Image 1 (spheres, rainbow, N blue to C red):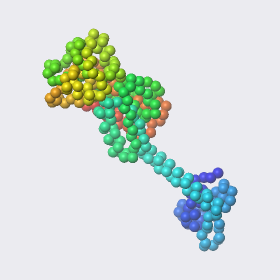
Image 2 (cartoon, helix red, strand yellow):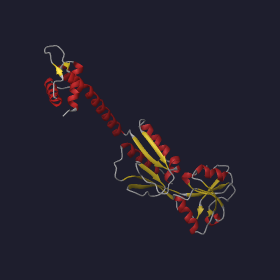
Image 3 (cartoon, rainbow, N blue to C red):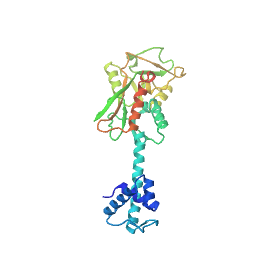
Image 4 (cartoon, rainbow, N blue to C red):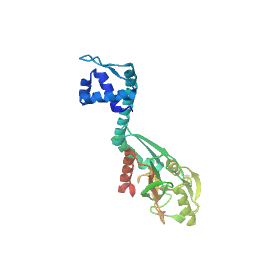
Length: 294
């Protein structure tokens, strides 16, 4: 059976011309080199070197040339594999992360920036999908605004409170009564994910807002509120409203809506790569910060 160590010895002898110099190059004894070449010749069924004796260098036989050409390809592949493994252990490689708008805008930039700073060779790929029932599939990590189904392990990262957002002057400062939203023109997200739960809360409270526009684009919701199309009720991670905003104000609802929950899931049946482990660690650390977790 051909072994990589035998091919490495063949390559060294061919490059150096003598068994002695090949032994010095490899850190072997000359007898060890002779033994490995002999084992190689038994494996391939013939001599790989002509040995003229004395100070003359050995020369490859035709069989030896064939073995060396293909052996160098194997040695090169083995070296590339070892290098890839070294990069993998160091955290390089690829990580696939499922996300959605709020996480993409508010959490992931810091995670990705840190990963790229620490591991410039890392191949980080993001997949954003608005779905009521996401599946982990081939993803390494999946962010979602609720627990994820399937064979996963998961943890709740943070809670994300809701706020009423309106054009300045629409409501007086302070909380807005939930009952006061009945019949009010509202810009809303599609009734999937946590939005469906929020609308069930409205219904339970006997409140029926007049939905005049739906869009999954958080910026689109705020743009239409700025334009005066209606008010909106959004989780804080989806809001891009400064306290000194000249057009918009935010208000807590009264009674308060239960906050949505941001979860992070990963496959239960697969070992995460060091890169995926680091991404998970960064997300958990970021979510634990008071300014993020609320």
